Image (cartoon, rainbow, N blue to C red; front, side, top):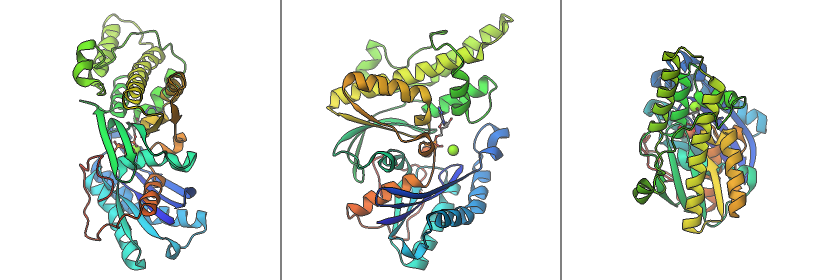
Length: 344
Ligand code: ATP
Ligand code: MG
Ligand code: FE
């Protein structure tokens, strides 16, 4: 099928065209610069930016794929989770296109899209696989039996998401927003063994109840204390070492638990997804450990890890291929959509 994908759950307006498993076009307009001075996404600002960017981004995608909207087989759009006002813009655009051109509408789960997008880079997904979803708002371990209908969350963060931890640590280091890319870059010049930061929920006692869960708020506090102490002592803060050591703690615990899930649930493939999946150390350490464990690891190119329309088109193409019924034109945006609900 030829599908149009539209994403607007946070601060990226994404539009893409996918035919089968081939990515024909993928355009993203981000309002991130408008949020920098607030240190985080401002929902009202994001909604307005989506309104301004939606039609031009759609036009750019169609032009670059040389596709006329009349040719598409379906409109696939993020229905949730995300910011209500932001979601509504994409959903309204998708409904308008579906209605005007009499095409089926598919309201889809953004988080599942973060996992499905890998099929554009590495082909059809296997029958059964594990997924490590690491984004700005979510951090989960999933067992996937069918990407269009059967995902089981076996673990999740009990406090901050991994991306949120990156953003908070970058802020306390005065490095700007969003934190992921700046910490990733700073860490390249630092020593990951310089400071021993805590790995949340890895003690024998925690593992009993939280074997596949994560916690990053203690890590964030540990970084904050360490930096504060250093400042009180009048010393310079070795930003690169702090960044590298923090990044190592995050990558270590994410990869260790992902590998443990694969062993425990008999999974021989692990798909990485979400904005934090762009992280260089996470990608490297995961490949290393998966290789040692005999697990095939699939990592979408970094440009498809952060929010985009291709993830919705990829998931939508799969949903259509499986013959699922389209969504009603009456569906609403669902800010708290759970990861188990793929299609609304
Ligand atoms: P969700 O997908 O949970 O709804 P979101 O869509 O806002 O949240 P994403 O766009 O998937 O989040 O990811 C954004 C997050 O990814 C931010 O927290 C950002 O700091 C982080 N991130 C982006 N690039 C990197 C990187 N290279 N290293 C670490 N984190 C990164
Ligand atoms: Mg974003
Ligand atoms: Fe996302």
